[in-house]
Image 1 (cartoon, rainbow, N blue to C red):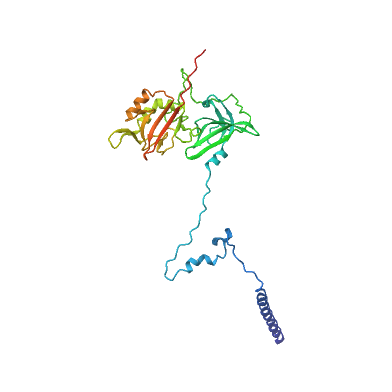
Image 2: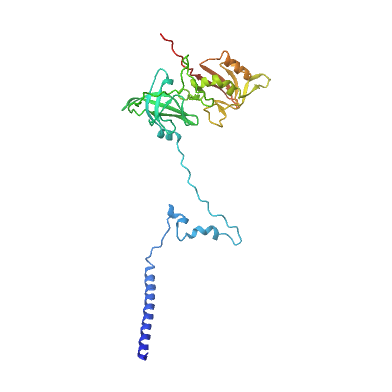
Length: 349
C-alpha cells in the first residue's frame, strides 16, 4: 500500500472520530437546555395506578419499612393488603326481586282455599308451566306466605297482595299481583293438595313421617308480637298420628319448684325437632329451651303427664290453645296456637 493511501485512511478515521465526539457533545447540550422545562412524572395518589405492585419500576416509598429498620433490627412484615368489605344484601329486596305473583285465585270466605301462582327460584313449577302454586302457610326458603290483602291503586284499581314473613327478618314483605291474564291450564287447574279425602271428608296427610306439607307458622300479619301461631290442618293431622310419640315423647320436661318447694310448672330441658323446622334451632314452635310451661288454657301443668291427659281429654279437638310460659330470664308470655282444623265434608241435602 502506498504512503498516500495510508494518509487518506488516517484522515478518514480522524474525521469519523471527530463526528462521533461532536454528536455526543450535541446530545449533552440539548439535554442541558431541556432540563429546565422538562416535567417530572408524578405517580397518582389514588386508584389502581397508585398501588406499588402496579408500578414499574416500583415506588421507592414501598421499601421504607425495610430501609427505616435499624441495623441488626427485626424487619417488620410487609403492609397487610386490605380486602374489600363484602356488600350486604337486603333479604327483603332480594326476595322481592326473585318473586313475581302471576295470579291469585282468591276465596274470601276461607284463606286456606286461596291459591297464588308465582314465579320464584325455589317454587316447584307445574309441569311445563314456569310458575308454581302456593297456599297460606307454605314456605319459600326462609319466607312463609302469611296471608292475602287487597289494595286500591290509582292506576290499576283493586289488586291482590301476598304477605310474606321471615322469623329472622324484621317486618313483612308485600308483593302485588302483576295483573297478567289468568293462567291457562291444558288439563284444567292443577290439584294443589297432594292428599286425598277420606270417607269423612277429612284431609289425609302424606304418609311420610318426616314431612309436613304446611308446618305451623307465626301469624305476624295479625299479631306483631310474634307469640301467635297458626297450625294448618296438615300439621294437626301429623300431631294426631305422631305428636305424642315424636314430640311429647322426645321432649325433656322437668318439674319446676319455687323457693317454698311448691310446683309451679314444668321446665323444658330439651325440645325436639319437628319436620319443617330448621336444624339446630333451640325453639320448637315458639317454646324454647329453659322455658317453664305454667298452664294450657288456664289448666295448671305440673308434669308431662298433665299435658298428655289434658290433650287427650278436655283439650282434645279445640281450635285455640293459650300456653302460659315463664322464660329462663323470668319474663312471662303467652303463646297462642290457632288450629285450622280440617274442613269436614258437608252432608248432602
